[in-house]
Every structure is written in C-alpha cells, then in structure tokens.
Length: 180
Image (cartoon, rainbow, N blue to C red; front, side, top):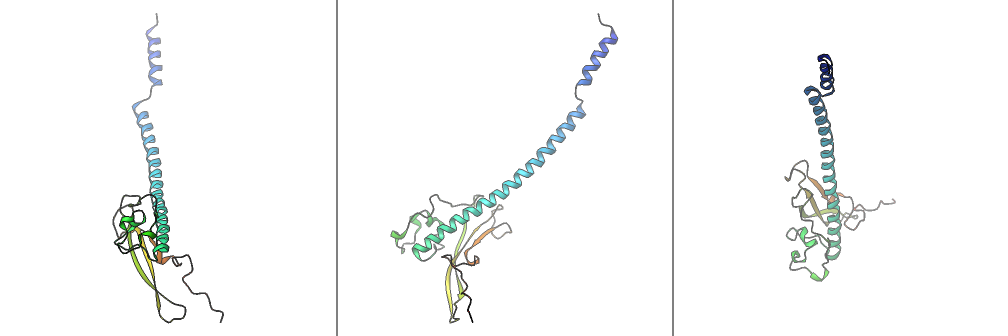
C-alpha cells in the first residue's frame, strides 16, 4: 500500500500537469488577437478586390459602349441606358435594329455591391485645329456608387470617357504639333 505522502505526491503531479484558468484565458486572448489581425487583413484585401472587380467591370462596359458607338455613331441614350448592351428591346424605336448585336454576353446591371450603375451621355466641345469653331464630341460618364451605395460620396468610382485624353476611336484628341 502507498503511504499518504506518496499519494499526495501523485496527486500533486497531476494537478501540476493541468492548465490553470489563467493560462487558458491567456491562450484564448492570444488566439483572439491573432484572429482579429488576420480578419482585418482579409477584410481589407476583400475591399480592395471589390474595388478592382468593379473597375474591371467598368472597363468591359466601356469597351461595349465604344463598340455600340461604332455601330450606331452614338452612345446609348440615357433612356436606353446600359441595358441596350445586352437587351435589344431597350434600343430606341428610331434606331436601326439590324445594326444591333449583343455587346455584353451577360447582363451587368449592378456593380459589385449590388447598386445599379450610374450612366449618362454628354456632349463635350473641343476646339478644332483651325480655331474656326468647336466640334461637339459625344461622350459618356459611367460610375459606381461604391461600397456605401450612395451617389456623390468620396468612395464613388468614375470612368469618364471625356477624361481619357483620347477620342472614342482611340486617337489623340489634341491636334498634331505644327512644324512652324
């Protein structure tokens, strides 16, 4: 039989091998801290990825708008909107339906955050090289309301065709430099 002293030592060794409540709480606090850091990093990357995905969608829509302009010699009207890029029924009644093709295979009616795209057509005036008057150049403005889904805030993402420095067919808007 074991003596009382030996029993106490055996019990003492078992309790020393177990974790105390304080040690468990410290480990949990460290794990929560690490999870928080990882979570913040992942969510920060997700926000950047959403913005980049929206820009890629906008570039795709821009390309489709430019193709539409080549076929119809104009951009879609505000009434037609972007839906005309994938839906023939949105085409203006006066337009030549035979010129229409599906400019976007899949409808892109909303941005990454689920808001409808902002779209409007505009006419910019540029001075012609001979300074005999202005030429009007149709352009468009395409934008996303951004993560807050509100128009006119700092997080809006704009793609403005008139600010690209090129005309709608890829040429330079500025006249060539004169030799004299």
